Length: 95
Image (cartoon, rainbow, N blue to C red; front, top):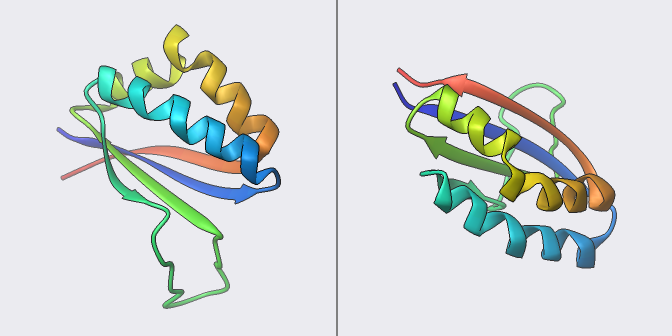
């Protein structure tokens, strides 16, 4: 079953976040993931949620998504992201 990594990002260092994006993409691809949404326009339909940026990644399953997140290849990009902004990240199973 497909699994999705959903990330809400608030950027505090745009240059650092650009370095993160450049470094993260190859690690996603090498773990079989793909970008479904990557920072497009966000429109709030209900509630008070107003995220600055949303990213959605698709992986074959949750195990593969977690393997990417825990990988040595993603270790440095993850640190770049954590220094360049505030994020919330979840894995959710598809249907």
